[in-house]
Amino acid sequence: MALGMGLKSAATTAVLVFAATTSLAAGLSAADAIKARHDHFKDMGAAAKALGDQFKSGAPDAAIVKAQAAKLAATAATLPTWFPSGTGPESGVKTRALPVIWTDKAGFSAAAKTLAAETAKLNSLAAAGDIAAAGAQMQAVGGACGGCHKKFRGPEA
Ligand code: HEC
Image 1: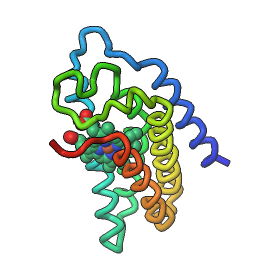
Image 2: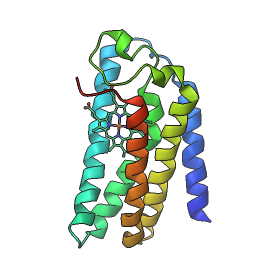
Image 3: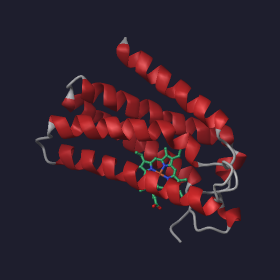
Image 4: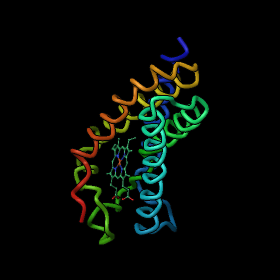
């Protein structure tokens, strides 16, 4: 049950990381943290797009799918650390992160865990060479992105 174990450990890691880093590290400004967060999301978006492009092509390149699925899963596992307290709109820095991220920590953590689990599953399928199943799994991954954005991301400024 390698797949089940992978999911479980990814979720556990996310919880531990979240608990350890909910405030700004010394010396890191809100602007730095928000810039880093945007860079992480750009990487995540690029990996998701690369995967989408492969599956849309109708002839996905297994090597690209494997590499991008691994990147997406690794990036998703660290998402909970990108939101230290003090990096919401109250910082005065331009951000679409809504205050509810910090007032509904359990809900946000659950949304992050869903993405970690769905991308871990995607990565397991891709690593096992089941490219068709990985393609089908993209639906759940996209749902995890959208589910969080709907509740925790504000409109484009
Ligand atoms: C747990 C919540 C959550 C999940 C899951 C999530 N996002 Fe986001 N995403 C956010 C929030 C909040 C922002 C706004 C961040 C900000 O402006 O500081 C954001 C912003 C972004 C941005 C814009 C970055 C920028 O430069 O402004 C992209 C692109 C993005 N997400 C892609 C994705 C993709 C692709 C996925 C799924 C693979 C995903 N996100 C999953 C919460 C999430």
